[in-house]
Amino acid sequence: MVVQYEKLFNKVMPVLAMRKADFRMEGLKSITEQDIWRYLVLKKWKKYSEADLALHKVIADIFSLTAAQYMTFSQVEELKTSNWFAPINEDELKLLIGR
Image (tube, rainbow, N blue to C red; front, top):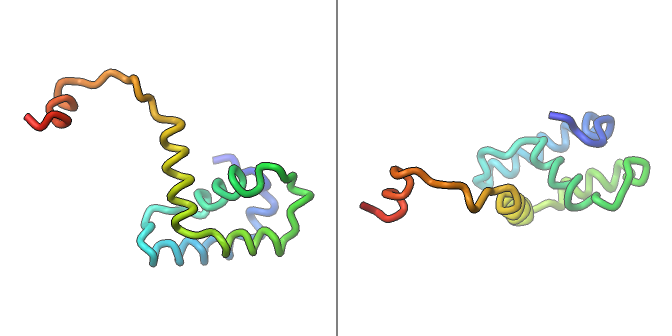
């Protein structure tokens, strides 16, 4: 995976790992450091360049992220990328209808 702001990502990896552990205790078992970083880059920092991001701001943003914010973001991203008009096969149709 290509990581935006890679130098900054590597600097704050221990903080991301701690936040990931927090989220796992809250029930988000599949979250990774890259998932948290992706949220920050695409949602919180979309108007900033790497030069604009001070280390203390990055760390504060990591710790201020809530599980609810991340889940909302991931659900919206999934809806954006889903193909709603993809054909379904007969087994999927039976599963949907319940027969």
